Image (cartoon, rainbow, N blue to C red; front, side):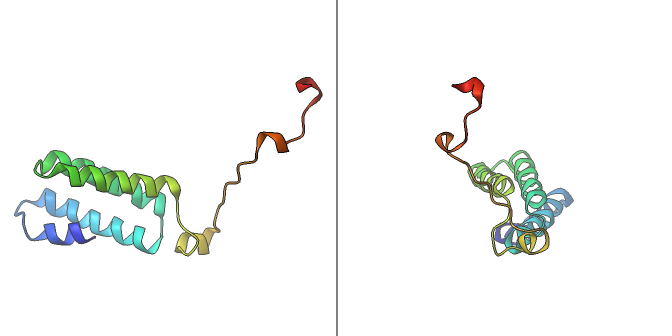
Length: 106
């Protein structure tokens, strides 16, 4: 959100301003934990576009895009609005030794 707000005043053309507004919205949604996968994907797309539209300092766009992608793939946290509305999903990976064997595996 901070990067989007600071870049609003620096560019007179409409495309960087639109990208900054999208980034602020996606950052806010990620911050409160609402529509986390969608907001993370939007942030990744915006950061990728900004790498090509604003070619200076592109490593920060790579970093922020990677972090947004990781948040989109990990999903919302326990205290997010998504977890309150849809339930928090937890994936338990069981050990191979703990599952019962079928007769064909003996």
